[in-house]
Length: 170
Image 1 (cartoon, rainbow, N blue to C red):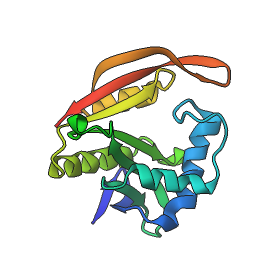
Image 2 (cartoon, rainbow, N blue to C red):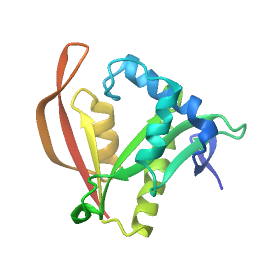
Image 3 (cartoon, helix red, strand yellow):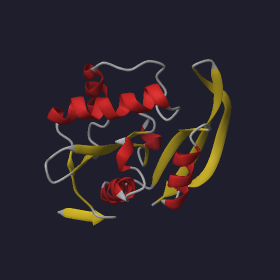
């Protein structure tokens, strides 16, 4: 299915291993230029295997343009491996920087939430750097609510940050 938001045509489909280099290029942009991705240094392409392993058994989506170029990706992963938390997942979503604000991220999140419901999940959590106001606002617009904050638990490039926890009940 081709979606159109703000004159951008894209499709959502399960991510493929072949999308790994493009996904890591997007992720590395956020590592190097922002506090949205937590590693201090760019990660190698092999890191995509970790994303695949984290999302095993959960939806992992790619947003692609008509030519097949990766515009962004999103995934769900278990919040905690203990069965008491089997109804809760964490969400991750990253877009190519020129694709933000065009409805692509919202489409990814809404599809992930829909697939989470189908999987029987009842809660989706997002852990967001306090220095990433854009992501906090985005998640609020997607119906997530603030549910907690861990103070000064992160440090990147010598700067401490909190992790803001947000929740969407399904």
